[in-house]
Picture (spheres, rainbow, N blue to C red):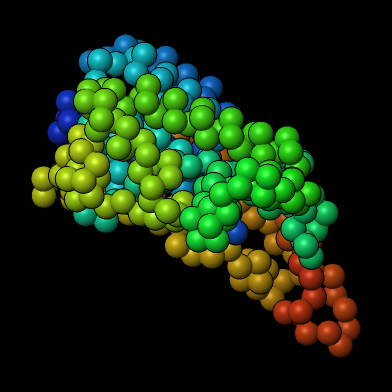
Length: 332
């Protein structure tokens, strides 16, 4: 709970001689959240309370989200301090990794992981997923499109321009041409953003290009994870290994957050209802917290109910979810 974490944040601020902000987007199965534009104003609120300060520590756990929201947040943080460090207690993937490139230092625990920053495009023009409800569409990965053409050229030996053009036309029959254009634009944009952010850690142009190439394509899969040793020794990022004292503090904060958001416990509607026909629920799915600004938490609230059907076992009767509220709340 935030009341428990306040003391831990104060200890972390003393150890790091900084002001601490935590940003958590839960990946609890069934209650996943992502970095999104609505978090930007929350950071403005916290930073206005903190004020301009020599150093800010961002405690970050996320599987990713909006590239531009991540870009806005990390630039905003850098406007309020001379030195930004990001502490990664566990997962910091996709747009979270992009944010970490904008820090002067990345503090990674032994279980911390970064990941590729190649984006997926998800628009109303994306392909419909067969058998899924109307409107549920397939994200189009930048690297999947690139892999399609690499397969044709490298594995199948297709080099002729006319044949490659035909492949593009066939692809456009399944993926809308505007989505293909958005894929290319997104890939170009994220490379540009990464290049701008990483210059706080690296200056050598060859090394910068190596990191961008690896994060945007050479890792081979968006699910690839980058541990502390690889981030430091192979990519050359400015990674710090926490001391035993610092690790214990990071672990305590992360454990408290993990337990409150029940991150590793899948959402089970039947267990919420139990033997009752109706039950109210409230779930925290994200956090932006600081000592000065209090706790903003993303909450989903509503009522579950199961209509009684005589002779039908309760566990197979569909559960109705009446969502009453979904958004950010604030507590001091």
